[in-house]
Amino acid sequence: MKKTDLQIIEKVKFYCLEISKILDGVDAKKLASDEQIYADKRYACSLCLMQIGELANKLTNQFATEYNEFDWKNAYKLRNIIGHDYEKLSTNALYQAGKYASTKLYEYTEKIITKEYTKPNNR
Image (cartoon, rainbow, N blue to C red; front, side, top):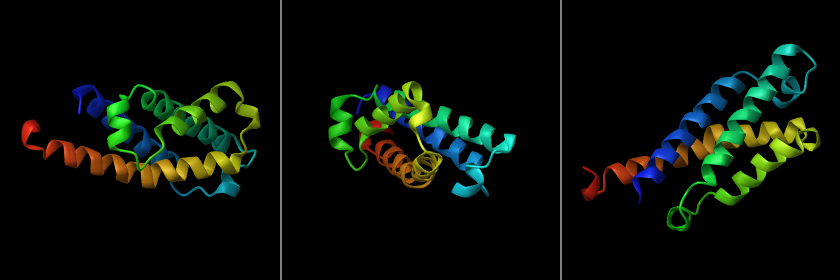
């Protein structure tokens, strides 16, 4: 794996953790609330998901092929939806994407990082 791919995955992991903090104690119904605090959380979650998508688009094809348990291209597609058609994205879809990133994708990035750092050529 190229060093840049690993650096990208570490950044993806960071944004997954940020989403976890943003959505801590928040369910889909609260996130859809008109209260300003939840509007702020929607925007913050959106920004993190956009960053994940932007980073995913920078991964090499070799990396995406080797680590294909996550659809890196769909992360970039979500980034484009958020960036260009934000008003069409339902709060529930945003919540589901955020919860997925903060749990499943976070775990997957940890798995990738651990595997790469334990390879003999990375010690």
